[in-house]
Every structure is written in structure tokens, then in C-alpha cells.
Length: 266
Image (tube, rainbow, N blue to C red; front, side, top):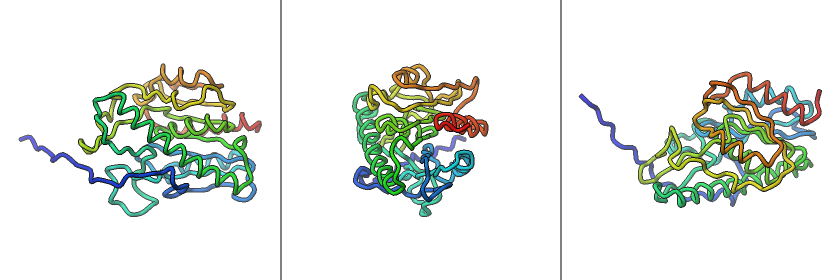
């Protein structure tokens, strides 16, 4: 007997305008909270939360003297997780889409995703400006790091601001397409329309140093377009043969070593 599950239809959500606020749903701060000399910001992946990056943050804070490591949590819940109440739990989405476009149309889908990325970038810029003003720091004291979906935020924000460094792990990924009509993503396992052309959202030049740590078998990282996107910048590459879309413990050490290098810490 075949059991057919009813199709899940996500309830309609109010339109989100993240560019109008500068707050996160939750955030973790580890390290030197008074007069830090460097600010490290970690952006979690799709479906994760700030607590999921707490161990990574602790490792970096312990290894970078004078650093304040902040893990912001995306303001929007994932479409499948809107009923949970605790801000410290559940699944969160940096790039929550309205999903009203015709998903089969490549151009309208790309415009929707780029619209969401630009809005999130404005939101993160305001949040980061406030944090830098509080600690009397500049972009040259900032390292942004992101895993999976968080790598999209770190790269697009960091390059335009000209921060000291941007670290992408398991990224920069392609972004799944959300459809309100279908009540979910229409391309969870492989991209429906290929690469999202993030280079359109990046500056032609930037003083920011990049580091990309990825698995060669990661289905969410399209190697050739990613390498082309980061070609204009100074970038250190590490491809782990046969590794998929995960964050092994060894990446804690690799990311720490790269951050110490660009900070001039022996």
C-alpha cells in the first residue's frame, strides 16, 4: 500500500523588510567585550541558529587575542519552522523569499533572490555599523565568516565594505528557490537554474582578502563559477577531496590559522 502524504502548504507570512531594522533575532558574543582590537562575525547556514556556531566561535575567540567573536542569528525563520517560539531554538533563514514569482522563469527567480540578498545586505550593514561604532572599530578590524547560506551574506557584505577578510566555508553556495505555490523549495538537492550569479552583487575590486574552504564533492558549491566570482580578489583556496557539504572539526583549525595570518599573529 502506498501512503500519500498531503502536500504541505506554508501559511502566508507578512512581507519582511529587513532593511528597515538593524536587529537580529538573537546573537552570541564571545571574547573581549570591552575595547576589542578585532571583530569576527560568523554567519550560520540555512536551517541552523546562532547556538550551532558557538563552538566555532569559542575556538576562534580563544585563538585570537583581543578579539570579539559575534554570531548573529538571522531575523527570519525557515518556512517549515514558523511555529516555534524560543528565539534561541529552531531553524533560521538569512534569505527568506516571498516566493510569488514564476519559479520556471529564470530571470524573475534571479531577480527575487537578488532582491532578498540586497535587502539582507542593507540590514547587516546597519547592524554592523552600529557594532563598529560601539567598539570604535573600522572595517579594517573586521573579519566576516560564513558557512553554507551564511557564506553568501559574508561574501556580498564583506567585499563591498572592504573588510579585512572574508572566510567562506562550504560556500559560496547556490540558493534554493522558494515557491509559495508549492509550499517549499523546488530545488533542494540541485539548482533549478544553475549558478545565482552572485558576482553581479560583488564589486569589481576590493581590498578584502578571501579564504575559501570547501569539499570537492559538495553539491551546493559550484566550483567553476565560484572560482570565477572570486578571481578579482586575493583568495586562498582549499579543496578537500571527496568531502561533501559539512563542517568537519579540522575546519576550525584551518579557519583560525588563516585569520591569524591576515592579522599578523604568529
